[in-house]
Image 1: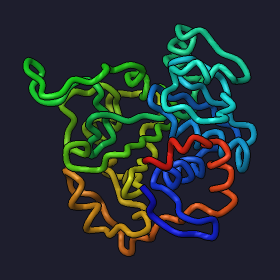
Image 2 (image 1 turned 45 degrees about the vertical axis):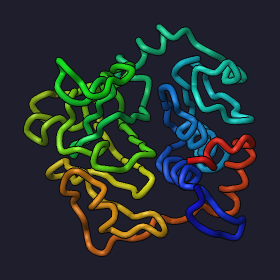
Image 3 (image 1 turned 90 degrees about the vertical axis):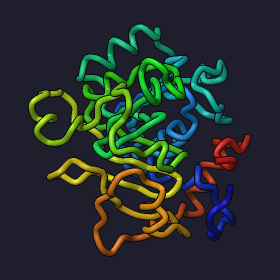
Length: 263
């Protein structure tokens, strides 16, 4: 799906999201991600090649460190990701996720994401008879142990973005400031949400999701209509900056199979 024109031609929503995520990565970050993570993989590699050369990242399933991504593969359980600087035992990665002093960034998503950034990858509906089952919590319980969480989702609709998740698999800001403060969790909480429609962060007082920008061609009302809770909206809301020709050139060299172009 293409969504805009630039000097280098059309860009896809997936390419735009990768560029948005890359812009939030720092030179001293160590990031980790789970399966189906082509988008954050590209974001990390783009950051390494541009603004954050000191960044390190681990692709969950294979536990590959700094995979070279030529080309990008859809799943981080693909053997091609072993074309990397090195690989770690999966058990060691899980232990490091729980330590609170290794990973500064955790890329997360979910079947449901709520107003306070809590994520659900377990089940939708009543626990005894769910309408949808997911893969399970995987590494999401460790969200509270990292410096900041970057949430991404190609699905921005009222089924995904809900007031409160049906199952708390990955803690965001829990039920709000009082509950978050009382929990005394070690991490910094969710910092950013990037979707197919918009970029959001969290209001520092209420810890509820707040609209930062709408992607080119998308209106504020479209984002509100697609969200199952009241978004905090500041006026005016800017448009997300489109990828530059240089950024697109790097992304497309990495993604020679066009994995992100179909997103």
